[in-house]
Length: 146
Image (cartoon, rainbow, N blue to C red; front, top):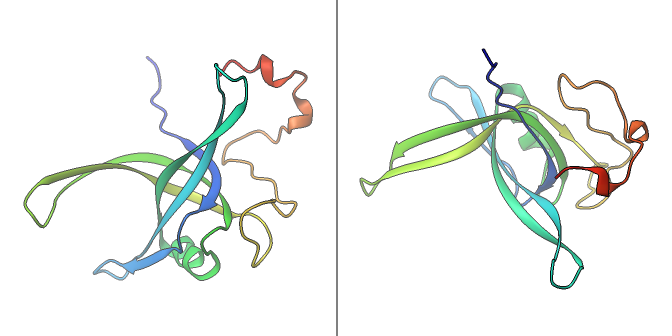
């Protein structure tokens, strides 16, 4: 029997400042929104283009409080987490649905006060990943099957 896997790893930039709230029980919950560019080769022109994809991230507890305190719009981050489906009733009575990412870890990339661009020498390794590096890859981008 195959195992179920629900894992997401994203590296991108915050599109807005973090929003911190607290549950009635006092648990911190921070909402982030990040943009991650996808590179594609235009078949008609042969030029590489970038298309942004936007993701909603939820960070719970102390890590959420740290995100709210130290992160700001434009800051590069790495997120390791899982997808979760939510359904709720909107104020107008309609049913709403969304897929969001529940972060298990958020790594702040770049230096303090540094916005988009550069990673400040930090390298993100997702939870559970081997410590392999890009130097271990002995091919070109054309060898990657996606």
